[in-house]
Length: 177
Image (cartoon, rainbow, N blue to C red):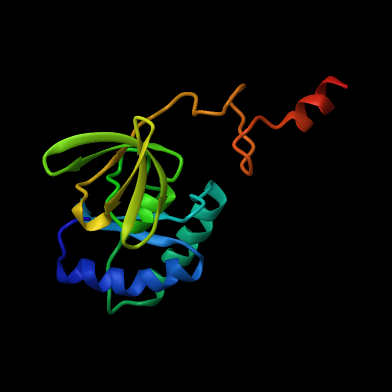
């Protein structure tokens, strides 16, 4: 996250509950000068990601909140609400949990380790490293990075059945038949 200034912290305190009420997490917030205006960048995410419709809904709610609260932020602004993207660091337990099934590279005691996240909770992350299941305390891990994969394991034609991790053959049969 960006450095904590009093103005930034007031905005986090103001907007965090608004974003949470829509079922998402405030991942980051920054305020920078942009001429006579301020640029407010808000990054949000959720356990199932966030789609464009949800970004628009959260953006309207954040804008309404900012417009209605002159004590936390006054003056003209430009608002950007977005998702964090794949290049953001995996640092919080919720980030590790959301990375289940993904290939992640992370630091552990100065060594770079790459493995597929199996599961994660507030205390530990279970990772498949070269076919070996390993458990690491979250607090011992350095920032991780999700590795971009063009075809994840189990994908035959790029589609994966969310339940079983297998290709959805029912859809193929309907298309062919």
